[in-house]
Image (cartoon, rainbow, N blue to C red; front, side):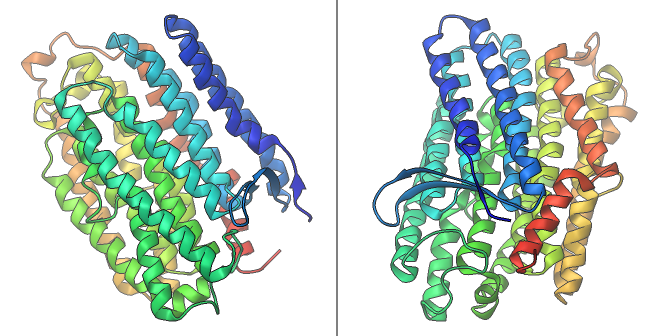
Length: 492
């Protein structure tokens, strides 16, 4: 089926940018700001949904935004591969908007126009990364994503927040330089930078040059937080909880992992990646990151920091899946983008619920909190079980496919890493659940109750969706992942 030319992808990206402008113009009217954010999130998701039937029919949607110099064209191309990330980020913007309204109201938030505008621009950038037709477009919006999230990281304005912001920019802007070098190098070698199934670099460089380019790409996608380029992420936990959720589940880190997947599959190509041994290097990096980050998570008493190190490990599941270069492995990696997003945003939302209701941030202070906040901790339990990879939550299916992919590739050590990681996940999540429900409530928790409705409902909604996607994983994400893998293999 011929690709369909349609402006819908461009409009979907334009809506949050327009919302950001309207929000800034309405900086003194809190309710109007909140309305613009919520309405824009719903409209954006609706526009992305319009693309779903066409892609599910086996076609793709394209739109040329702006033709600049040769090799520097802004273009959009929506396929099954990218639609998974686009659906994830646009759908979670809705619940994030609701949650942000409740959270910022509870905290008497300041600089709300800047907060919501930056949030909208970040979502628009993530959508553009998902739907980029070429490396140039991805690079432009990947860097806009970095700049737009900086005001969110430093939102509190404290010295700690400013230090976190400086570290955030130091890591990610430096990585951006490497990504730009990778773009220019690719353009020079291949004469283009369009994302093409099978890749564009084969036959244009020696294995040594390919390996150097792979390294610069890997550094460029430091948003994937692989070790040792990870420390900016736990430091950024000083940001408000809605921002932490954005960083870890909706946009930033997922853009890094998705970008690396896109480059391996559509710039290098699976055959070249295997021939040059790129996958073995990535397997090693991802495996070390998965295991080491889990041990770091075990040592954290601050709940958000424990969740941050958990995210670092979970992101490398995505890198590990694509590094297997098998259909099941790549499908598992693609599925882990939305499934982890829904589970992890649940965990951060519930951490915010606890903070709003009790002011507590450390796990050691949360004894018996499940008896005071049963709905919140029930949602947390569902998210934690899913991240560990236990059924019937959706995380079970993405991890199952990753395990099957490792067997398919004959990579038994990778299977052992996955199993060990699930044990470690349980080791740093289950004690939280046990102490929350089985210990007597701490004195400071007496009289405490559930967080306000606008903070609690999004937490329950994402927990329920994580469960429903585990019970019914086929539509749309599993079907889209299957279609993406089939397209990579050259099938219809």
